[in-house]
Image 1 (cartoon, rainbow, N blue to C red):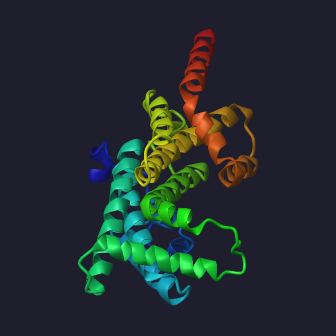
Image 2 (cartoon, rainbow, N blue to C red):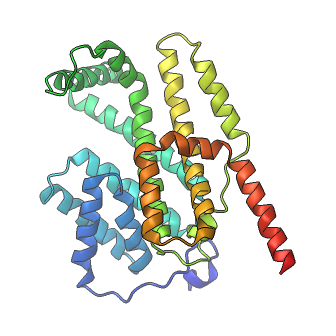
Image 3 (spheres, helix red, strand yellow):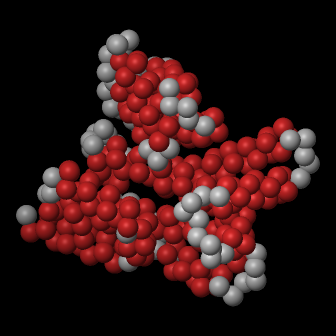
Length: 306
């Protein structure tokens, strides 16, 4: 009854429960938790397709399988499991897209902070910052031993970047994982057209118009800050640029939609931009108000002429 009467809950029909599906969804979740980049994707599908409590069951089973079969790191699986359930529940409740992304960022930051505090406690230390510094130093020590390490690499600058921007890389990377999972699930047609997470409705999204200029001003201003404040400010700006790249994805999708290209072709274009065109996506996000406004006017004129 709640699925019918609650407008904030996705009304997509569920598959009749078949226990034979449990191993499939569990393994799919395990692969997602092990690869990280698409970790929420399998959990989203399970919530879209399975009834009642079964999405949680297969997600938990997938986390266990990721640890046993794929030898995935426990912290990575834990983050992926919690984040995947949070995002999938938000989709089912039809939480507005940008609100879900912001909440996901807050959750990721909280998980990272709790993880650092827990790790500090296990070492019987009282200063989380010193533990973080020690952790970064160990990571760089391992990197120096790599045969790929360059002799003229500026390790001190790298250390400062990781110390002050590392947390923002963690947040941005997980947000990118969430966004790619949302986009791919929409691209594959997992959501009905009425769903706010369908391709049709995602293309209508637009960030606040002033966000792009504000981020660019902050980026320009961070250049004049002293170290380490400069690195910290740059980390904040990088999170903003990630959101602009999300808007760039939507603009790219809107530009390709009238061409009616095959899904495989569009997928290849998306992949190319992800691998080598991140700042091109940021640029599309910056100019998105003009592009989307023009397309909206053209659409209205076309509808009036018909």
